[in-house]
Amino acid sequence: MYKIQIANINLTDLGVNEDLLNSYEFEVPYRLQWHDEHIELRNLVKPKEKGIFVDFVNGKLAWRRLHGGGSGQAVAKAVFSKKKEKPAVYDATGGLGRDAFVLASLDCVVTMFERNEIVRILLKDGLRRGYENSDIGEMLRKNLTLSDHRSILELSDEKSCDVVYLDPMYPKSNSTALVKKDMQAFHDIVGLDLDSDMLLSKALRIARHRVSVKRPKGADFLANVKSSSSIETKSHRFDIYVPFNNEQ
Ligand SMILES: C[S@@+](CC[C@H](N)C(=O)[O-])C[C@H]1O[C@@H](n2cnc3c(N)ncnc32)[C@H](O)[C@@H]1O
Image (tube, rainbow, N blue to C red; front, side, top):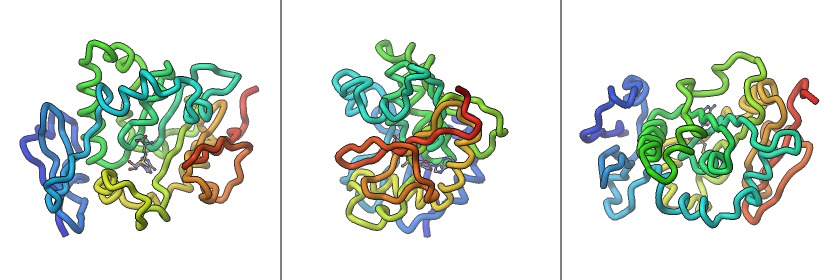
């Protein structure tokens, strides 16, 4: 088994929990390293494979911000309700920040929670570059942050946001060819979110208006709890729940 390798990254500047970082073990060697002004994750056994990094400024997310369909996108429909057009959102499963960025671009104020220390490093680095960018920096500083709390499970049970958005890893897809090649390293790093059922009950306690859960198409409901409604796309389903003690 291998520990993560770190090349030329100042972990103190990034506020990294080094004990947690050193506790991870993988079947293949991975390295976090600088490349072209960003920090990326590389599988050292597959040197030709592109590194994984968070890029809010260029690439797919920039295209999606400019041409992706705005509030007509399924993730936006899953989060916006008639009660609150631009809700304050907790993205409880931050990952590489893609869904959170789409919502932030649509002027939601999004707080991401992410428990994996390697993913947190990638997110912090992506946010740093995004905050400095002349096109999106102001919007991003206003609308997208990473919480110091690693999980919403650390929060008290008070209502503290309008919407909680959940997109845990779906265990069944992890071992199959369904995982896109470029995301295999991400899946190896994060593993299976086998405890994700717990997130739903917490989310239902802290959200004021709505909890929205992204699932692969055809997947079971999270925690086997049937949703009030769902939005289907070609490959996903967004299950929408009404929180406990919902404010009318
Ligand atoms: C499928 S990814 C989310 C992808 C994300 N929606 C995106 O657009 O990039 C799931 C992420 O949630 C994180 N996660 C799972 N359970 C968590 C929990 N209880 N608290 C915080 N983060 C969690 C995992 O570490 C992983 O990075």
